[in-house]
Each structure stands twice: as structure tokens, then as C-alpha cells.
Image 1 (cartoon, rainbow, N blue to C red):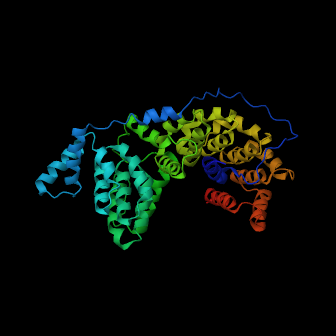
Image 2: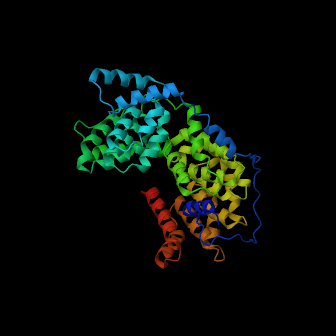
Length: 421
């Protein structure tokens, strides 16, 4: 099996309950399904490669000038205060400042990386969210992490806010992180206590992070959207992963796009039209992780219910993003011949709050000839809809007997606990 296939199976296992899944022929007649939109796929890898090349590179003369500006602005080359201030203003006003700031985020000196992150945040070039998110993934220095998180917050990306809250626990980062948190909250029109405690700030940051998770949009008051052409080119650079590629580029793309919020959804929707199945599978997984922040992708996902290679991923994504309008397409899948589709549908119907499917889910749960994956999914779906003695007993039995994949079961139980909490 190629590495790409292994990656896809691993990533998909948690959400779709793959353990023991095999296709099987079912005796029940399949319910009538509404017609699906036409599935229209096209070659995508070369399209992504071409799009990635559209990110303009400054000419050599401009690059030299920007590097001179950056050396002074980043403190690499010493200059008097007046000169330093003028050079920094010139850099920040330059449309291609991103070219040197992005490079500086990977500088060997932590102090330079911190300064680069600060300049990124003040640049108003919101497309720099992409390299900042990548820096957030790999940064090991605690002091630099909060500068990166703060820069993201300034650019209207709230995925780093809880990194600030985590920094409250470290003596060397607490005060700086607290100042950053207060500024971030103020910029989001959040009312603060007169003398906020660390717990107060953490709670308010959590509320903003929850809003970001739910909507994919920041409450920051004065942030412009990223330049669309530049954003597409940058995301194409990360999505243009050929089949059989190593894990790291794929993981980088997932890390960035699952934290980019709603602004990355249009590019993911575009990738769903990829003729190459592995290129449309990863966007489905990312959309599922984005959850309700990706509801706008519903119409782009729906045709993939007719694609044998990615239909189960599509079902999961529709459930996670809250695509209630697709319920007529999902209910019949509980009687589908494909075990993975039945398992995915059983969870999706619960997540979508489909009380009309209670009897259908109960039938799957009570069928002793049914796959355990589907029965676990049906129990989960029923418990999403409310209290259900038999469903709870079935999951409790799996937990006690340890006869089901433990990480998957733990995740499902945690989700139920969070919904009920």
C-alpha cells in the first residue's frame, strides 16, 4: 500500500469507524434516494501547480532593497533610532514586505523570528496568516510562540488565542501573553473586568476561540480579508501534493487549512473537483474538521455522494459541517450495501439532529448481524439525539469489554460528553 493510502486510512479511521469495515450485501431493499447533482471532476494536480506559480516574486532590485530594509527592521544590522524608524515604515508600507518577513519567520535566531512575527502582525498583509500558521506548528521557543499567536490575532485569525492562554502558566511568558490577550480581546470589542485575573482572561479567550471554531471568522473589528489571488496561490502550494508524497507536506496542508477558518473554504471546494481521488479526499477531511465553519461547502460536497472512492468521507463531512439540507440524501444510506457508508451515515444523522431517523438508527443498533462499526455509529447517533438506554448500554459494553478500537470509542464518548455538557 502506498504511503498516501496509509495516511488517508489513518486520518479517516477516527471519524468513520473503519475497524473491521468490509463491504457486504444486505438483504433489505434500499430506500429511494433523491437524484444527486452531476459529479464533474477534472485533472487538478497540474492546475494547482500552475496556480502556485502565480504568486508574484519581486524583481532582483526590489528583493535587494527589501532585504536591506529587513536587516535593519529585524535588528540584524544596527542603525540609529531615526534611521531604523524610517526604514521600518518603508518596509511596512511596501506591498511586497511579505517576501522578506516570511523568510525571517524561519531565521535561526529566536529574537529575529519574534521581531518578524511582530512585523507580520502590524503589516496588515493578512495573507501572512499562512506562513504564520506554519511557524506556529514548528516553533519550539515558548517566547516566540506567543509572538506568532499575537500576529495571527492581529491579522484576524483566532486559532492562536488559546496559545496565549497556555502561556499564562509560564513565568517567562505570562506577563507578555497577558498584555497580548488584553489587546486581542479589546480589539474584538470584548468587555473586560476592571482588574482581570488570569482565569478571567483565559475564559474570555476561550469564548473567542469557540466563536472561531464555530464560524471560522474573527470578531476583530478592523481586519481586511486576504488578497484572494495571493491566498489561492499560497494554498495551492500546500495542496499540490502528488500521490505517494511524504507525510510532512500533507500534514502541513492540514495544519494550515484546519486553522485558517472560513477564508480557506473556497480553495477546499475547488479541490473537491479533483479527478485525482487523493486530492479530493484530503479537502473532505479538512472540511469535516472545520465543522460548521465550512457549511458553505455543502453544495460542493453533495455530488461526491455519488463517488464510490470518497462517498463515505463526504457523508462524514456533511454531518460535521451541519448540512441539514442533505438529510434526504443521507437517510437512505443506513440501508446501503457499503458498511462504511452505513457507519458514516449513522453518525452524520445524529450530528445533524435528525429525529426522523430514530427508528432507522434503532434498527441498525438492534441488528445482531450488523457490523460493530455501524452499531457503534448508530448508538452514537441516537445519543446525539437525546437519552437512549439501549444506545448507552451498547457503548458502555464496548468500553467495558474493550472489544472496539479504543481511540475511536474514546473520541465518540468525549464528543457526547461535550454535547451534553
